[in-house]
Image (cartoon, rainbow, N blue to C red):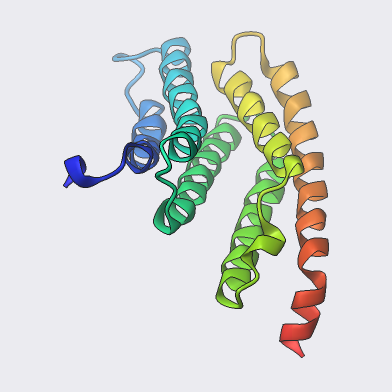
Length: 187
């Protein structure tokens, strides 16, 4: 089955499969792996997964392997990785609950909006914009710094604050893009 699947789709599935391993690192006994090493392993898994996020899209465009399934699966993998990371970071008391809630709720809301817009044939109205890419980059950097936890929490939480701000701005941007269609289709 894997030999028939395009490489970008394999990378996306890999990102999904890595999520439980990433979380599981923190459940290993301290006698097996101390916290500093857990941080390094988890950060490495997260960084690798984040790189595959960039790589799968790049390869899909470059190799002309873009598909509707890949377009659906990619954000699912992204959301799973970010949500799991935020839950881990809140559990470790490295970032703020409000940041995790705002980011996760926004991701669910915009995913639902995109799904609905696709159903009514208006998916291009809420296509990924530069502000969304900037938000994602800021989130990924913040999460990486916070996972590493090697004198990087201040930088990580400053980036997390910026990510929350960009999260809200991008949410309002996408809602504004969809506003007229939302009003027209819901009345």
